[in-house]
Length: 76
Image (tube, rainbow, N blue to C red):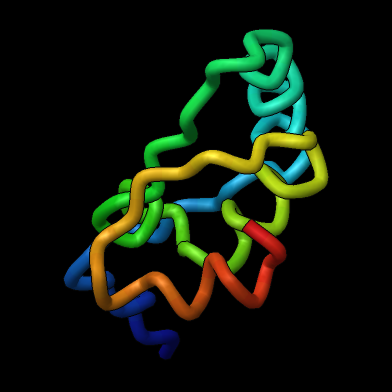
């Protein structure tokens, strides 16, 4: 007898780094661009999104006070 697979209480999101970078590169075309990384980068994870935004060349970001250290370590 096999048991059914247990259900998760919350859904699991998979974030495409290449899609994030593609979107960040489009945003970076505007020299006045500000990436909004508040609320844990809208649930995508502040460390990942901050690194991608920095790679795209965006230097201005909006963050929550508790997340300032994460963006500073990414070079923003």
